[in-house]
Structures are given as C-alpha cells and as structure tokens.
Amino acid sequence: MDKAKVLGLIGFWCFILGLVAAVICGIFLPKNETIIIILVVFGIIIGLLNITAKEIMLFLLATIALIVAGNAFAPLTMLGVGTFLGNMLSYVATLMAPAAVIAAIKALWAVGKPGD
Image 1 (cartoon, rainbow, N blue to C red):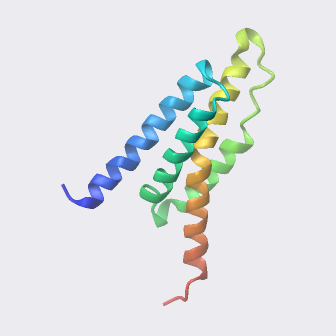
Image 2 (cartoon, one colour):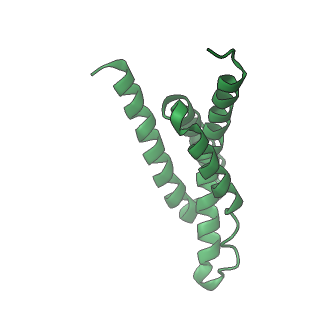
Image 3 (tube, rainbow, N blue to C red):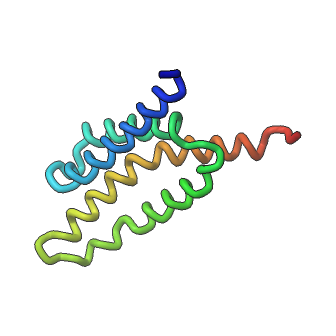
C-alpha cells in the first residue's frame, strides 16, 4: 500500500472515530476537556489528510451550516433530547472546526498564489 493510501485511511478513521466519539460523548461526557482535545487533534489530522482542493468549498459550506445549526435543538426539552443533540453537534463542530481552518487556509493559499 502506498503512502497516500495509508494517509487517506488515517484521515478517514480519524473522521469516523471523531464522529462516533462526538455522538457517544455528547450523551455521556458533555463538555469534557479531554474529549475536546482529542476531537481537535482528529480535526487537524482530517484537515491535513482528507480535504482535497475540489472538496474545500463544499466542506467549508457544510461546516458553516453545522456550526450555525448547533443550538437549534435546544428548545426540544422532552427527555433532554435538545440537550443531547446540542452536545453532540457541539462536539461535531469541535471536530470539524480545525479541519475547516486548515481547509480555509488551503483555499486562501490557492487564491493568493500566482496563477498559471
């Protein structure tokens, strides 16, 4: 297996593990600093290894939508559903924010470098 495939798999698994951790920890460990640090590290890895030039705009748009919708479920008070969903989305946003910053820097770099 070549280096690019290995790096792609590492980024993919960081994404999957990050999403699973965000969902589970959003229910059982909300606002846990250790989980936040792990998600930020996973997000950095995702941003460096997974986001290609053709995916940057869609990824940034999806990340913005995710962050904006983060507290939309707070009014759902029945059985604490709103709290759980809000915690999960907060963790997913924590996972995606570092990747979004890296993708935005990549996009700015592509725009700012001299053209062909």
